[in-house]
Image: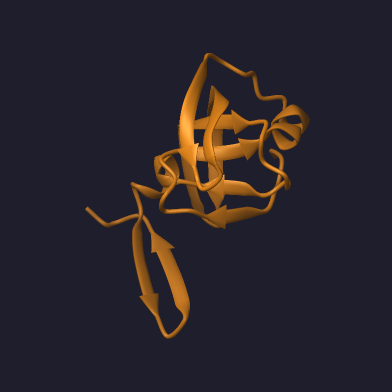
Length: 102
């Protein structure tokens, strides 16, 4: 079983953004650097790939992410590199995520 962490759903984020401290605890390997635009401005991050990401019974493998050394908390931003494959429905204050049926 992998590491568990808290996340914030961020549909405005292109990829999953992992705080540097959480990335170290998870043993993520920082890759090449790139610059991204955040709510706080332009910052330098490190590319990485997550072997798997699981949310409830939804699991995806080889998900693109970046390690962000500028994040002040340990909350992961769950961005569109994970969310783009899901169907989202909001009704009466409840957000339901599911893999679309084929």
